[in-house]
Image (cartoon, rainbow, N blue to C red; front, side, top):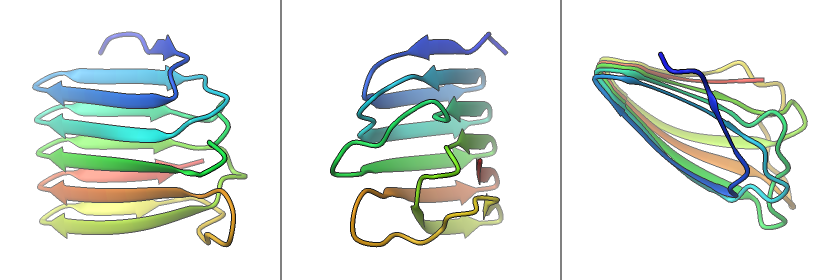
Length: 118
């Protein structure tokens, strides 16, 4: 695994195929993006970020691998998941979006796993 790279971009586009991908985002207006792990793993750390005023959307896909997404405890999230001989899990404390900023995650796991944590 490579050491996590730090980025101040407002969006993420990460792919790990037979490899590892680690990224720490430091954004004041995070908008979302996509993360893919196939036969490898991806770890995304958003704990120092702030959501965009319109919220953010992440699309995560794991096949024979795993994706870990770390978010701040204060972020409300909404998870839409599909798992095929795999799993999607959340250990987050704030899983209710109301009116206002929210992180929406579309997670698909096939023979792999996606975890969302604080």
